[in-house]
Image 1 (tube, rainbow, N blue to C red):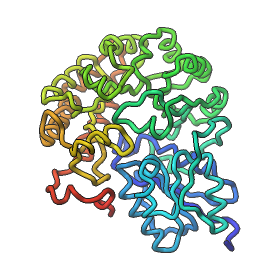
Image 2: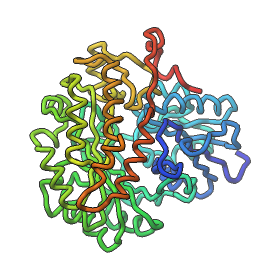
Image 3: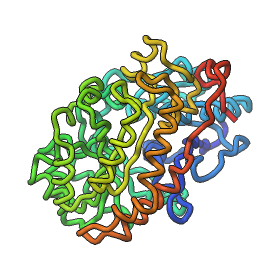
Length: 447
């Protein structure tokens, strides 16, 4: 290569993430600034999140790296194909290419399987030397000690509500049938050193912080150490956890004192049959209402996540679920249609039972019915989800849930109105004719 500083373009394709107050996206994908931080200083890096700015396939670039999830895979392939037509080498990675490497390889010069940290320098060295290998992977998982600081300054900062997103751990000991986390990141927690996390948070600009761990409170002893270390920073933050935290008053107290404002919690289903069938271990046998009350009493809001269309669900699930969410005054909730993502046990089950209806990955947004439900029609499931969202984010429901004894009315109102705007028609496609549903993976919607 004759240029002193090769130009690397790192892209996250759009997948209808949704707009919040002020016409902004909630937060960027952390992988973009993290990959930039892993890249040597003699490479000129540009980050493009297509959720906030368009991808220019005619951009001046020597190398292109694309990260994608399942719903954004068709768009990722279209972008990759366009750059490769210009003779620009493309490397692709992320959750979807990790579980579908052969499919991704048809659209890229190299596929990174698994986490980027162990192989990224090798990928860049091979790009520079013109000897790119078709696959890059490492046995096992990366050590999270000494990770470089994500280069958030390369993002379109003004287009997000916050860029203060931080990861403190990876992996999950659970193996929920509909989730890819344990498949991609392993069945054991791996932790960054608490002092490194604290220093990163301390370096961030003002405003709240979003911790993107899949379960920041999953390992109670480590969580307590982290929360105690965060207290002096006096930062407000939001994270993800499960209901087991409700059993530990000390953990709840430390989380609240450290600045925790809300937790995104996978409630998934009110049915014990569904919870057992999908191996949602933390919720099996748990009084979810009592757990929510305990977390609320600690001063922590809950954003609940539910899955609709599990095999134990009938058409009554919609009323039961939304009534529960309203009764327990969840600050917000997501009501996802069961989606059989590749790499999950649920996908394997539904394939074995010949119940997959739609192979277009761009429809795998958790707002489209891509399989045949057991106790309802696919149309009933789609309409049921619309009903649940419509009721939960109706103005009467928003007002009722926003007036609380903790007097957080304005914050709750903003969150609810934002979710209301995002979910009014988000990602909903008209039912496709049978002959169109049979297209192979990644074949449709790539423009």
